[in-house]
Image 1: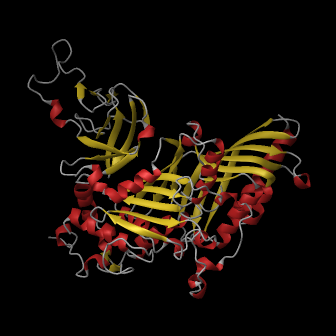
Image 2 (image 1 turned 120 degrees about the horizontal axis):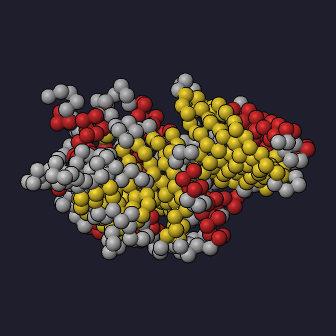
Image 3 (image 1 turned 120 degrees about the vertical axis):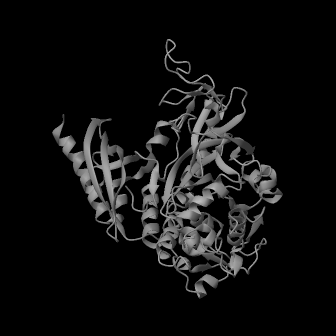
Length: 412
Length: 158
């Protein structure tokens, strides 16, 4: 057994309050994650139903590293299957999206229906009695695997495992209610882009669930009193710890001076926006929550930052690289003013986002920082040692929840 | 071809990328008229008619806010770009404005020495010929990046 054999990796005795640095850089662990997590008993985010409104609409995406086709079949049902030809394993579909009646692998013209069934093998019986497959050949035996698809308020998820509980059960009632809160009506897609993180996928998830960092790293937030930890909010940890919601209430900053007294960089600012219309938002959901970040293990984030709504799909691209696929949206009922507001507030998020650009850098700083320290571990003790929900966001409860779910799936 | 017009536009583009690449960010908003629009998007969004930008400003005030945030709020490692602008096509658009389309490449050089081809794409510009001080200024600059992917973060404008 080599030192890097996953079976030889032992989680630190402190348990949930430690994250060993090998978890971010061990190739064997990464391979095991693909099998046990992404191809295991988890629900993987595929995109918005609004991307595939018509029968025949399809997109290609990934479940972990596994390429998949997502299509709406003739009956309107959503289907997902491995994007791998039964014959030689080539991609069946090489387009990002489109509308089709069938998919034909370009390599040897093997053809599939919208459900992923192999429907024809070119020259199966040969030409003029010569060539072709033996009569007892069973090319269907190599057919692409089909995934179970489930939706929640227009969000599409898929799983390869029969053991995955229903999506509703997987999310749990508290998280599902918070999904419904944002996905309250039909959406209109405003556009998207991808951000490449030079770090392990779990560092991004860690970052999303880490409510402690938000107002410390992202000083744009704090300077404009958007999300100082003294504002009213909280964290809910759901499911088996893998899902969470953090939220902030509007205009509840108590004006306390903890930041100033601690000499925090994030309170030092004092400059004003010349064009404050960027931050002019409306309480469109009507509950006073100005910011809600919701994460579902292993790779989904739903964002409401004022009127900026987005879904983010976390795709691992090797042990040290992650693609974050952003799709920003509004509601189909939005008027022009609302759309313009959302487009302006999109300045807050994404690779150039006033309050999100640092995430891409900070998580990569960890990846670079731990390179010589696989056997050391991160300390995760803010808010105690448990994973319960918390009124305070000076807490790492949801980070510990993530690692509890992770360890269960991985058997670590 | 109107050679003087061509040269005036190319000179504006050259001064623009020199200012960015030499980190004279405070000068960046001055390349725009007061109500100038600037946005960065992807070819994919642009071709699908999707309005989302990666960065969007519809006034010089918003551009100045961006510079202030880059100087005082946002955290990013020391880096700079080296822009190359080429293949500029200019056409008249009204009495005092022109439209210009150019190709650009931006290499990003990190303080560590790592260089990468950070972005390639097109500039779609609407230029007012006699802006403030009699110099041409952008009424609109749409930066259309060829790729939908951005490495780590986009701090300095393109």
